[in-house]
Amino acid sequence: MAHFLVIGGAGYIGSHTVLELQRQKHHVTVLDNLITGHRQALTDCDFIRGDLGDATLLNRIFSEQAIDCVMHFAAFSLVGESVSDPLKYYDNNTGATICLLRAMQQHGVNRFILSSTAAVYGEPKEIPIPETAATAPTNPYGRSKRFVEKILHDMEAACGVRYVSLRYFNAAGADGSGCIGEDHAPETHLIPLVLQVALGKRAAIDVYGTDWNTPDGTCLRDYVHVTDLASAHILAAQHLLNGGTSRIYNLGCQQGVSVKEVIRLARKVTGCDIPVHEAPRRSGDPERLVAASNAIRSDLGWVPAFEDPEVIISTAWRWHRKHPQGYRNRKRTTQHAEKLTDLNQTGAF
Ligand SMILES: NC(=O)c1ccc[n+]([C@@H]2O[C@H](COP(=O)([O-])OP(=O)(O)OC[C@H]3O[C@@H](n4cnc5c(N)ncnc54)[C@H](O)[C@@H]3O)[C@@H](O)[C@H]2O)c1
Image (cartoon, rainbow, N blue to C red; front, side, top):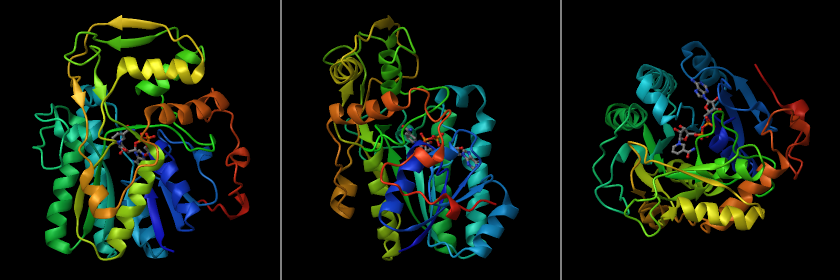
């Protein structure tokens, strides 16, 4: 059993990773300021409400707790907002991460897992995109993450921090229990938006461009199930805990699924008519984003359990149908089907 500090653990991907860590009986401490996360997404872990950029708080956490590995999910991730307000992104995603890394260095904590992104590649020159492809992010969000990867590289040389940077493609789906899932506001991801139409919360789904050079004319994306992301984090942590060297890995299913195909599958899964509104292309949308993610499969034995996009959409639908308002009005005590809960043990300071 290891002790993980999960920063941003109340968010979408963080909370699913916390749940998998708990299922494997690890000790988890979550630090989250809840700016986009949800306290109700967590059960039975030490929860600290606070900011990643708070050096005093970090000093206290690392002094009081013997942390084996840090998993860092906390970031802003709206591409458009990063263009209109770049400092918000560099401040939180890069600057606050430097504060965290400094605290880790001061306390001799030297295992780190970063939530990175396909956005570091920018407009891809080859499909599927290997980790060796040139990085050329086209927006501040992607650059804010790429800077952190470069800082980690320098820190490894300077002070022996070992890290795994996981470049996610399109995270999707929800825990099989249907008890936790995706709840972003505003929501910008295709699958939850399509399911909001099925729930009657939106009139139609916007499709940006039907004249792309793809089989059905709509963009292709690589959807990876959130529980598979969580399992990749656990393998990455085991790698570091076993003394493994720093790595950068793509996380994707290596298949491009079109926007029209997502809508077709969502109609099948939900049984609902999902009206479409065809809109012009958006600037900055790459035509295809598909990962080559064989490196983590062969190095760490990662085997995604939910590669079928219909299964990914089904798990998302289970969550959205059970919780049409997301985490709003939900109590923590009703959350996990397998009754992980002992709220009396849920510390907060
Ligand atoms: N969702 C995706 O498809 C996707 C794809 C690629 C990369 N990522 C990256 O994965 C990570 C998690 O994404 P997500 O979709 O779960 O996002 P999310 O917004 O659901 O989760 C982020 C969490 O971090 C917390 N947070 C943000 N800034 C903080 C700070 N300064 N201090 C403490 N807590 C803070 C938020 O409250 C939230 O709980 C992000 O780093 C994101 O850039 C996500």
